[in-house]
Image 1: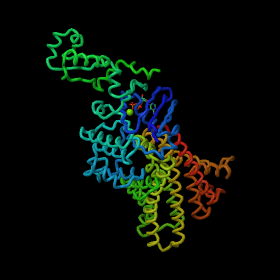
Image 2: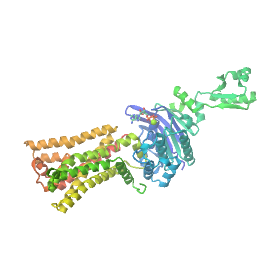
Image 3: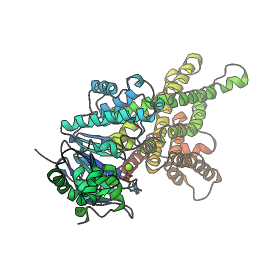
Length: 302
Length: 279
Ligand SMILES: Nc1ncnc2c1ncn2[C@@H]1O[C@H](COP(=O)(O)OP(=O)(O)O)[C@@H](O)[C@H]1O
Ligand SMILES: [Mg+2]
């Protein structure tokens, strides 16, 4: 049984006249994390709701754990974890009561709740009403709620909003643990530097369309952002070498992804330089570049 | 909460917990108690010595006040049950759980009905016990029967307004709008419609016969409630303009049946609205 947990094909979604999603396709395999990136209103939350089966797309097909069409019929068999964006839980209940409530609805044993409260560092506040919680504490509770049942599909809509750096790090640690167990994870976020080292693929969206989809290296290959190369005595090398001088910008060599191999070969064989630093384009730079020159993703245009 | 396994019971238990935390239960329970005690003992305050009204007029004054206050209490209890969860995002979350929409609806309804039963049972029950203890003129069986009838009909009335609240709550996008809309419904059924009905009853128009009055009563849960209580007291021996209400041909069982059909129709509508609700 090697079904792809999440497979969306050519999804379109209309709210009345407004087209929120247009021809979006992607899949997430078991043990993979996909970062869902895009500006506010790009359609990230809508996409997650479609995966959940909470809204039906106007066109395209949704395939969750191999079951096609209306998810609601299959929902009962699929172990899903979900954190909505901006959720605020029941103010009058205590932290522990909220988790117990959701655990009971998912038929998760109560000891798991106690463990999660401890792990998320909420033990000291577990018997206080939620109205006394800070935003970050509520968000921790929300994330704990999402992973209560050790889900096979985990959908987090902007989970790191309001979390302190330690809590975010802990969250991604948790995600990685679930990944090891074969969970397919979709994380929508605006904190690119945080998600970069933990994601396997990224889907970058703009105005309801797919701008790019791929691993970090595929994304940087597709973008026009250059890779920087630095090594000792670079300046004097550039003085002597005409070929290198062509790529020398702002104190380092800058090459397009396509020329990177060639440049490295040149450095190693022609210049006998083996000790150099590669500055690969950051996800953030790729993202900004894509937002400004949006016609890169060939497959999305077909 | 974890000992419960049925989702309906889990949701109901959470609603009850919520209502006791936000002081609805304490507040409404006290108001009901205050009202029923003041209706019962107002006569004593006026005459200066213990004077208790006879059962028929006591029940009639109680139901006259309840017809205003019970729908209002029901609205306050449940106006934000869906719009509130929608605003805070928990409705979205609940729907991603292995639950059906009818389970969510039933759970909330069960919770709210339990809270209503507890509040009315406590306050009116206490009044009945007091009367049994200090009022010698009442027959215990008659008194208990009258209060049981009153409690049953009051909770059925509450149920209709809880369902009204659900429908409005499901349709609204903001809490404030839901409250406003529900107060309008309350105003319409409790004040305007009754006023119109009473005007028609006293103005003695030629086309108004008992048949028309029957239809008009059936079309409003608050008037069904009045009718039930008038009929229950003394089998149609009511005074004044309300006499026609109590003479309606439905009979007590028929009136209850009409009340239950209101509840059935409203449940069906709220389920339909929930099913079609866009997220
Ligand atoms: N219920 C709705 N009715 C109408 N338009 C909506 C609704 N939900 C979202 N939209 C619109 O769809 C677009 C995508 O929204 P969303 O998926 O929430 O974006 P994101 O999560 O990426 O910020 C936005 O332009 C938003 O205004
Ligand atoms: Mg969003």
